[in-house]
Image 1: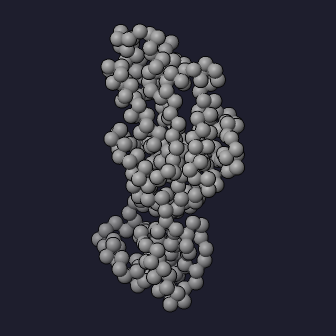
Image 2: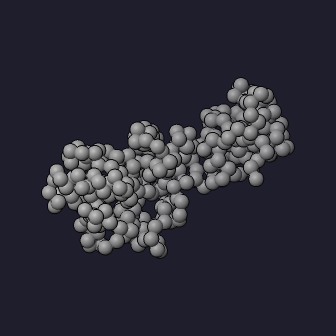
Image 3: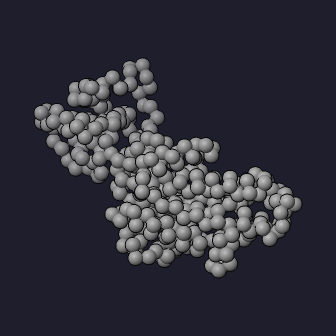
Length: 313
């Protein structure tokens, strides 16, 4: 069941968090440890948690009263009496409640282009910590499949690059190279696992302190783990379904999709027609139009020939 009272979330500086603790100490409040937080305090029917990201949460029936008493500078940000008493929680608030491990240092891996006939396969790996996880959530970073437009993807990518300088890696495989690899490996999942492992290894060169990585699970068994090298084998790798709910994986999905978008746009210019995403009927029609403009042997530079779409041309 959701909490009966809204969680009040404030972004505080380290000095403000220290000042809040000192005020609570003067009232005789006791403190305890909490995951990925400076401290947690129990104030009667209200819990206060100061996270390392700077987010400080007051949760409970007396939250607003404690804010007015111990954080009066932010009292003006409290909802008024006429406002909805249980507002929809933000993405950050939901994450703080449901998945505190998201704020621990770790990497996330995701790909783009796996289901697209035209264009490359791009795998990205992103490293986040408590502070950057909170900022990414505040910026609206989420799984790229939940973002409706290319413009939004590119805007989110710019913010991710700003927040995670030298804390991400990309592996882009052109359609021509993918066709070669598929002929050698015979399985797209094996190529995916190899690319995931290469992206993680590249990330670990820049962030050797990374202790853990999360990847979406595909195929049978721990495919990515089998392709890891020395650096990757030293960390914990968690492969599980719906990994994109994690903010680091979501950031990786945005980075990968943005790289895919730029490359499909470049390939469209080279082909002289707009190459659509996906592998539906419109893609088949476009592929047939492509063959009226270019020799069949050039299609492999633009498309994944091992897709069933090729059999219908």
